[in-house]
Image (cartoon, rainbow, N blue to C red; front, side):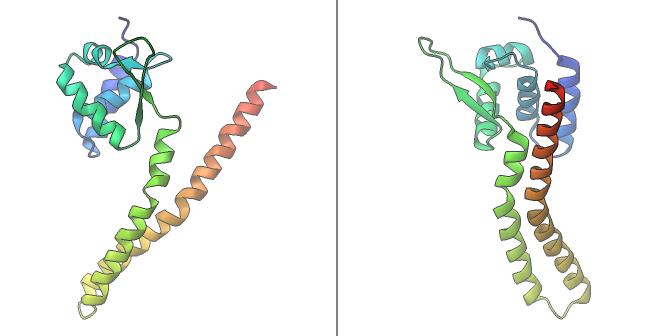
Length: 158
């Protein structure tokens, strides 16, 4: 099997791991970015990554739960294939907006309970404000991205 983009995929996975994603899901995600049309089977992913099928199984479960990848049943075959969800990254970001807002609500509750501590109040207020700002701006940024991408696609056709 040809292994396309392996070095860059490993470097990107290392960055995602440093940012907090578990190592094997990060490696699997980056391998799927370089996957051919139709994605990879778990066995192909294991071969590409040089790991066990068990390691891949846990990674694809993590990535499916996070809505980054999808399982594609292959009619007439026992092995499913895995591929990226179209626009996975901005879908995940938009999907997390309720989490940002709920977290801001919790931080506001903390803020109400600590109103006598100036340092803690400032810290909580800043966090709550940032979370609400991100929740408000993310849909705008995604819409801007979609407009830019559509514009670039239209320019490429001309």
